[in-house]
Every structure is written in structure tokens, then in C-alpha cells.
Length: 400
Image (cartoon, rainbow, N blue to C red):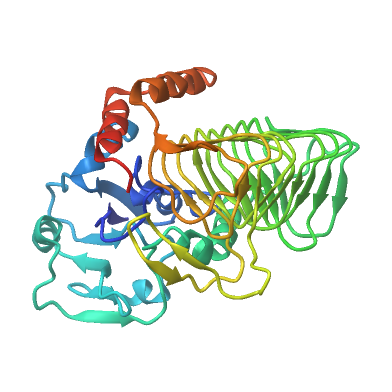
């Protein structure tokens, strides 16, 4: 059994995705990167490394060692947490070698003896060790790169999660021949449609698919999540745990614990945790010119070519939108924002933005925390001290 350490090097502009979690906890398909590695045969994750700012939150979330290497002398495979899908070069990586992403020069992975691994984790330098260049992009460094890796990650995850069974399909319209997995505790109501012509569908434990909902594979509905009446879930969508989804959704990843319970379109987007999208909230995922989307990762950064023709919104944790909110192509909504404007939301917005037609100001921390506690209480969750401290620290940093 090969021992694996996932390390988040923090060398990226990934806010708001990593404001409240490490990169290995990002849902990049049906699974997070950490969940994906834990399901990989013959490999065992023995420790996690992350930036100091989210160390306490990560310790609160995981029982595994955080920022502490194992004390044994076994060789270790170190994998960058920003690598959601291992490149093929990883399988032939020799002892003492490292993979480097050619475009960025960042370390993708290294297979090292125990002492060398501890040295690398302390210094993040390879010294004179031999390296192998990876020519394809394999690291997430901007919010829109989740879209870049989405389809490949979801395909991998659905294969890992598949346990084809079609129990409980009475009165359900099933089309196509790709694998269908419905967990024993899941419920798919009569009148729902499961379209398997383009790819597989996995409906996880305690998930619910209501009458009239249409699911088109490849797609995933996570534990305790619901596809509500008349929802249309288009291909390459992954809904994390404890979400409610309605309207038309395609090519979108929900991190978890978020609601889009009403009509409105959401395409090629990423939705963080504890988000609530008001009725009619709709995003654009394609320019009228059909051109490549140009976007900003943060309010302070410049415009960049994303390499994507279809790119929707990146919606940070705890974002709330009013009814009929419009989200423009490629926009990035910072953590904790509240948007109630008649004008469309565009560009990259700061954290804790309180945006109305009278202007944008900072969301008061005390008021924000009232809403945070109320939202979490609806799922019988009490936020930990480290989580609340991280929220307060982000608020003190101001918009970014």
C-alpha cells in the first residue's frame, strides 16, 4: 500500500473556492480531490498539508494528521492538492523524481524517501532532484479551472461510484443503456426521467428525485440531496450532499449544503457551501459572440483568457441572491456576498459584499454571522470555533 500525502501549496488565485477549505477539499466532480484519492486502489492518504490560514479549519474537518508528516521511514508519494486528476506520468514516476507542470513550474507530485519528503514539505524546494515535465495542464490555479477539469473528473468519479442497480424504479422513465446506480436508501419517484443515453447516473444514499424531474447523464446526485419537481439536470452536473436543486442546471458542481430550489438557469458554474439562490436567479455561460470568455480571478487581478467558451459563475460560500438576480458570463462572487440588484452581477466581487441598487458596502460581520448560524441550524449543524475564526479573519482582510 503506497502512502500518500496531499499538500496544498497555496500557489494560486483560487479565492473564493479555497477561502474556507483546502484545495484537496474542493469538489471537482462527484467527489472532492481527497475523496477521490481515498478511493484509489493500493494507495492510502496518511497526512494533509495546507496553508497556515486554513490549518485549524482543516484539523476541525478531518481526523487525519494535518501539517505533520508521518514518523516512519516508508517512502511517500506527495501530490499537489491542486491536481484533481493525476496525470498519466504519475504512474511511471521513479523514486527520487518529481513531476513539474511545465506551464507554471509548480510541483505536481514527488515520490521521495521519508527524510526527503519531510524536507520538501518543510521547504517546498526540490533541490537538485530529477524532474519530469508534464506538458498538459494538471493544476487548478484559477476558479475557472474547475470547469476545465470537470468532465474528466466526473467521468472518473462515476466509474468509482458505480454499482449498477435499478431498484425502486417503478413508474420511472429510464432511457438509454449507460450504468444507473441508485443507492438503497435513495428514492426516485414515479414520473421522474433518468436519461442514460449520454452517460451514467449515480443517485447516492438518501437522495431524492421528485416527480417530473429529469436527470441527464453523466450526472451525480449526492447524499441527502434533492432534485425537485420539474428540475432539469443536464449532463456533467454534480450535486454534493444536502442540496436542493430545481430549474435548469447543466455542467455545474455544487460543493454541498446549498439551495437552488426554484426556477432559473445555472450553467457551467461552481457553487460553494451554504449558498441560497433566490427564485429566478439566472446566469449566462456563453457570450453572444461565441468568443472565449475573459474573466478576473479576484477584484484586484487583471482580465485573463480562460480558454473556455462556456463558463458560468463561480459562487463563493454563503453567497445569497435575491429573486431574479442575473449573473454575467464568467463572474466570480466572493465569499459571503449578498446580491439584490436590478443590474446584472459581473466581474469579480469582493468578499462580504452587500450589494443593492443603492451601492455596494461591506456586510456587517455580526449580521452575517446571524444568517450563517440560521442557515446551518436548518441542517442541524453547529459551526466549529476554527470555522468561525476563519470567517472573522476573512472579513477582517476585507475584499479580495
